[in-house]
Image (tube, rainbow, N blue to C red; front, side):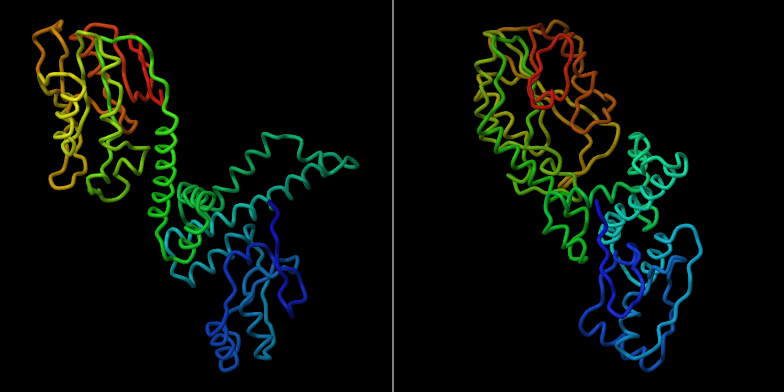
Length: 382
């Protein structure tokens, strides 16, 4: 990405790219600066690089020229002019995390351009008389330089690399939201959640129009973990805890219309994952699909979760039976403290071991997020 640097009218030399990161003052704000310099003179230095590039003070240069005051400058002699310019500007402004991340994102090509200049100079020095492109031959070094540029930009502004990635994601997907983040009108987290929700809604619409083809055949065990919607019930959780913030969800009607009956053998066990907020719908679904409710399994989670009234520390599995199919093991309790997998909504391995001990094959997992031996797995992440 090329860094375009606009000249400053009245400034005789070039402008360093780092000086471009912060916007120029306009209107009353700039007029106030001009009047202050007229009354009190230039109280803060204008900084330039040894090469004569204007590093910090574009607004002060413009104001000095407008006020008829001599421009006075000092030379910065450190080894990181970009971080120096950013540090000076950050001290003058009160910025949100999102605004800082936006500045860091703008800084990435500045650092990258400096790195590429160094690489080109190094290549020329190592091979005098050879073409300058020789310094770019090592693509691995080029990739490393780009990564380093992103980290340097984040460090210079004082934000995490993740925040910079968040802003880039928002900027690419929804430029109008990125501008609100830049202006401090919208938090970075809220902007990213809006982007994720929009993407997930589009994915849900796509899957509704073009559903994944279901496996053929009949199964003695059906396990499903539907992508329940919380917005449908007008339930929202703080932060990015809602399912809509993580993946494409389905309405109760969409879940009800799943062809469970076509997959179920004449004698079949059904294991339906549900939450406290969806229990009442889940019992109705079992009946709709032709299963009789027999029991409920409780996964007592090791850590306290979020909630809409009481905080949740359990998930539930409704166990239904179609036809006559007894359990293979009769000494199992219905409450378990399985360790939670690291991946969100992934179910514990202990649950599947329990089902394999108690229910016969063939078995199928619906909305699966991975493959498992001895099971058919269906889902857009399996």
